[in-house]
Amino acid sequence: MHLDDLPTAYASRVRAAQSPAEWIAFCADHRAAAWIAWNVREDAWYGAAELAAVQSALDTAPAGLAGPALLLHVISSLQRLRPLTAAEQAHLPTQGINHVAAGWFSRTRRYDLAPGSAWAEGSVPGELADTLTAGDHFQVIPRARFAWLTFGATGNSIPTSSDETLRRLGLPWKPAGGLVLRVEVPIGALRAAGALFALPTLFDGLRPGAQEPDWRARPESEHRPGEPWGYARDMQDDGPGLPEVIAEITPAGTMNAECMAVPSFDWSTRPFLRRSAPR
Image (cartoon, rainbow, N blue to C red):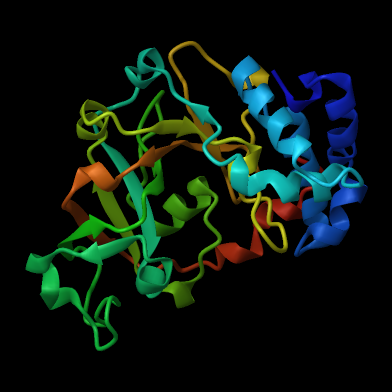
């Protein structure tokens, strides 16, 4: 189901967010408005329980809010809204990957270096040394509770090139961010520990402040049996990129990480915005 399947009184308050014109004032780039509105129209992972949760969140919003302003008001209470069932989790592989920019390692506070990898520390606590090069390996411990994971599935394999990885994961990173770090996340172990897995929805793709359309809704026409996951946005052509889910990673403990090369292209330019409309 879609947000349009909310009870009429609620759907009517949300519906203006389906219009690109309504998003222009909320977007960092005016061209992004069409893609944000497309996500609102096409996001289709909601069941009855999820729509009930959205309805409850909307009840707490000021009566005068509607459209984009209303959705942005409730995003913090609707993160990881659509958990994967045990049956859906059974379709996930045993290993996933999370990516981090080395230049933002300390700022994101997503990981700490494991004690045995102290050699990788730079002069600033938590940052990675400038001496690290592509191909270097070390270990990290999760600091943030949740992370977006990708994996190889349905004929998709995770690229070995930094630029191709960023392109197919919808990550707007640029050479100034430094090396791309690939963290190996043990999905099988997380499942055994009872960790939460969730399908990304619109409320995970929106953010406080100016909006960027890097997340891509997976339209209902693209749902497939045995594929209970979303797809990242391809930064080059806007189509579906790599599979993605959100997972609780704190039970994983120490995880292996690898340095990939510094990207050669500035993906924050979002080449897909040159298109006249979303795919």
